[in-house]
Length: 112
Image (cartoon, rainbow, N blue to C red; front, side, top):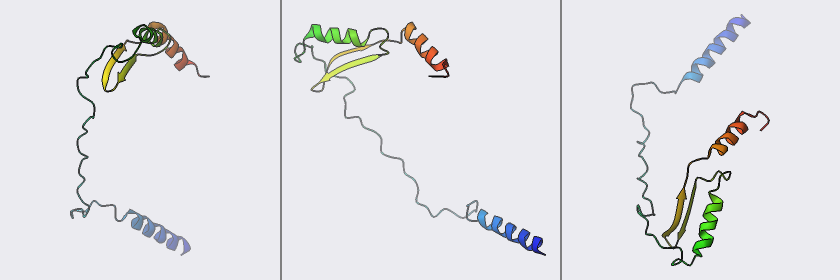
């Protein structure tokens, strides 16, 4: 008799736990979800440019800084300088072969 009562209680709990999960044909009482408004960037699509010297930069020092940042082994793929909303300098490059080898060896090293 105790086994039967225990079994009936387990079944009743299982049925009750499954209730309220939806699946019915009645419409949902929840409000419709509306998507967020579209993102509008505060930045222009095309940047106004300015020469480094006109923006108050030492052109040679800025060039040296970009050369340093973009050298192989630095893993830098993009560098950009914007001042007062104007594009002063930008450089882009792909990843160097030596950098790829370093990343592959780090990724395959289980102790890393």
